[in-house]
Amino acid sequence: MYPRLVINRKKVEENARKVVEIGKKFGIEIVGVTKVSLGDPNVAECMKKAGIEVLGESRIQNIKRLLKEGIEGPFMLLRIPMISELKEVVRLVDYVLVSENSVVNELDEVAELVGRTVNVIYMVDLGDLREGVWYEEAVNEISKVMHKKNANLIGIGTNFGCYGGVLPTVDNMKKLVEIKEAVEKKIKRRIEIVSGGSTVTLKLLENGTIPDAINQLRIGEAIVLGTDATGGRKIPWLSDATVILEAEVVEVKTKPSVPVGETGFDAFGRKKHFEDKGWRRRAILAIGEQDIDPIGLHPIDEKLEVLHASSDHTIVDITESDNDYKLGDIMKFKLSYGALLRAMTSPHVEKIYV
Ligand SMILES: *Cc1c(COP(=O)(O)O)cnc(C)c1O
Image (cartoon, rainbow, N blue to C red; front, side):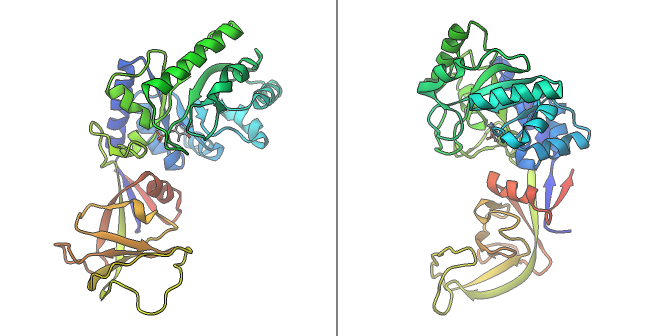
């Protein structure tokens, strides 16, 4: 059935192995992040085979899926938890990212009831403006986390490139390390883990500038796609041929490049700009916004141009291609992070593992 995603397990595993290796060089543990794959057990298995121990997931449902498919943790919950899910969090998760003192207190109480202990990593916002205590208030707030029997403050962490697109630098990394040291002094206990971000932080390992005290990174995109969206690059030492999307052609016709008639907005309320290139040869694919982000489709045939998509149709300009596309032909694409996220989530996209 089409559309489908062809996931190359060997390439994902090789990427994971290379990321683990570069981490090792700097004394950094890699948490393997499976969230872009909807908690796909095949992806998790590749990470485990490559020597990754802890798996990071943003959603409890995905962790449940992994467990059901026989993937054992330990698991890290990447999205700061909802109060309403704490019971499940405590049952299934070993490391929880948090940004509120009250959540640590609640976690401790729930953990007492469930009869389990959880490890807590307190998030610090170094400027990207997603989760975490603002760095100027971090020492104060984190030091207020009391020593608890069931919720153990094991580390601090940070995020880059998620909301503000802020990049990790030696300076903001050093800030995180200073916060760790100041908190340790105040609470007179060691902070074991300093979790310095995600794929975008790999750059600081490549150029050897990552501070010594950073000892953990949480990596998803680099392993699954070989790219770094925030850094705007393909990672040169990783493969980006890990996942290929295949979609089927359902119409091939020659039409004008500019709509005829008065125009309003498209199906999603967007106003598209059309450049008049005269009559063009175009194919329609049986895949749409429900399954992919059209901006994130990168055709393997480089002479194709993805024009636009509505819920169920994607329109591709094939005029310049050397291939003579016909009905029933299959077009292949590499994917951006956003496009892959949607394709993995769509029940209408089959997943094939090779
Ligand atoms: C998604 C996420 C990651 C992994 O990010 P990648 O860019 O896929 O490596 C790490 N940490 C947190 C908190 C996340 O939400």
